[in-house]
Length: 196
Image 1 (tube, helix red, strand yellow):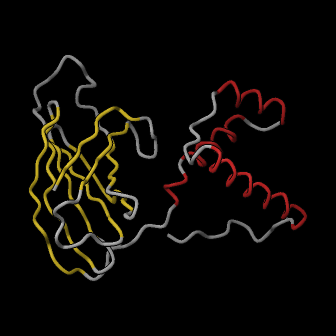
Image 2 (image 1 turned 45 degrees about the vertical axis):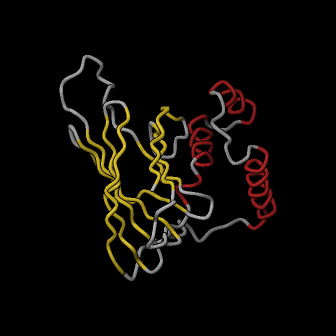
């Protein structure tokens, strides 16, 4: 849905301040190599008290800045051309990862990843907790998960890759990094690599 401006009012006297805020956000990204993390809660509490700002507001602000990627415009695949079967698998721990197929569009590719595991009850309740997987190919491709879901012994994810991958994908490496939550770069440790 397109963003609608929530009010017609804007105090033009603060325009230079708002521009400076934007400039400081850019500088913050550059200094942190675009990986700022999240300030310790003690810092937020201290800044809140010193500056007269609500802690919840500051937490929301820093959370939004940490997750800037979620605001990046996403390519909508258009102009379907063909399906390409991949059917490559990797076993890591108790999980079976499969790259099943690639759908080729004129402006993007859509890649499907399936994950399967045995549904036997385990003593450790976290042994099959749901994770988020981000796809990395190389610097020239933008990769975004468009949907995913899981059941008791299966998970399935789809990713949009732009620009479109070549129809001949041999020699391309697909790396999936596991994270606890979307947009949270605290890795759980697993990296699944498919060499085609």
